Image 1: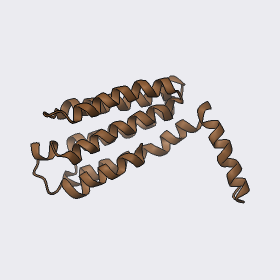
Image 2 (image 1 turned 90 degrees about the vertical axis):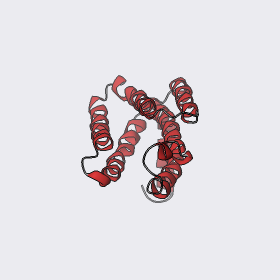
Image 3 (image 1 turned 30 degrees about the horizontal axis):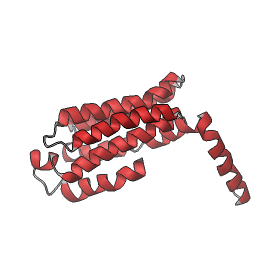
Length: 170
């Protein structure tokens, strides 16, 4: 999901945010809509990655598809879109709490709270959004830790371990 999201985030942030005036021109721009849409793609995949359950993935995929659909309606609702992103994040982090990994869940949410604060309050002015992205980059290793403990991941981990041994790295 992160790999699919990255090009759209890069296009929006690197090429358009500084060229478009603040307000509706930036909010309605196709690159921002795609950036936010692929956050939802990412969230759907992360729902499988934290649960290891296809039924949980499909429920989240349907929700996130609805969110993507709403990104391309004529009128953009930024607050609604942000709320829907937060709901998608809650959805993919809940399986971690459900299986009892409270420490990992709290680590994720500490990062999410700090990044949300940077995003919403802009405490360091123009650097806040960059800082937001740097803080958010701490999340994928924690999600990989969550995924590696799932029964659904064990076959792939065994294959990777065999490959490492055959390549002389284990």
